[in-house]
Amino acid sequence: MMIWGMPKFTVIIQGFNDRGFFDQSIKSALNQTFKDYEVVLSSDGNPALEGYADKYGIKFSLSKPSNHSGSVNHAISNTDSDWIKVLDDDDLMLPNSLQKAWDNKNKGDLLQGDAVIVKGDEIFIYKGKEISILSLLPIVMNPVNWATVSFSRAAYDSVGGFDTNVHFANDYDLYLNFLSHGFKIGLINGTMGIYRLHDNQMSKNLTHYRKLEKEYLIRKYSKFIN
View (tube, rainbow, N blue to C red):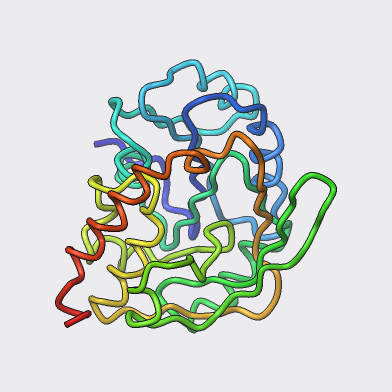
């Protein structure tokens, strides 16, 4: 297996279909005040996206067709960094996102904070919240915005990575998996990412699959409910 490098941070930008956001997301990842990091563009089965990697001089990870979880696991397997940030192609990083995460890494094995939500011309703040297994297991609403999240590679390895049975709720599963293994989720004060709400979001109209994944997570973590 080829290891790309040994930076402190790896930013993995994940996408499959080109929804017109890659230029912005990649530029936001490259425009960081923190300098000891690498950027990887990851896709499960769409080699055409390598054109964006070539355009910006970043690494490209192409896995076999699977899902978001499998694609990210494949990309992470080729890194050797201390911390990981997974950025969806339609979200953005702030210039100090990595620096704030690195400066606060003693607060937890997975870090989260406030998000700027952009919906057309509307902009508002989604406040990060302290979470626990019991606060997550109702699986009513995700209290953590994925655009703000970074996590320890050691903790990720310890829990076995992303569950490839989960696609749309893989972030929710990761939080539960970390907490169920005794890892800490820390809350950073301030804005940690920019999250878009738009008509082409992956899970917006796939309520059937979201329902199936909710049922799967309830079964998976049932011992913490009873």
